[in-house]
Length: 85
Image (tube, rainbow, N blue to C red; front, side, top):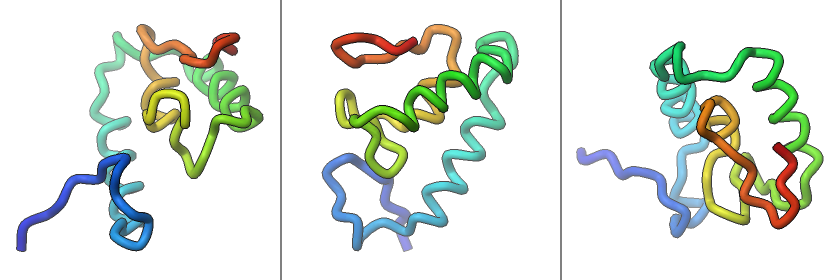
């Protein structure tokens, strides 16, 4: 059986949320340490995203990213009109 990748055009009923979160965790764990922000910065960014009206089920409605992945990256930034980080 071919595994389908999650995309922003998928319907929620077509997504296995548990499997998608597992894939995200694997991606985060494999991201190079030298390209990551510190744990404190990461948690600060996630707190700002969590309070943002653009967050919807872990996805930024401004750009479609998984905020947990974007917030981890040193090159990451907030795409909001008034960037939070």
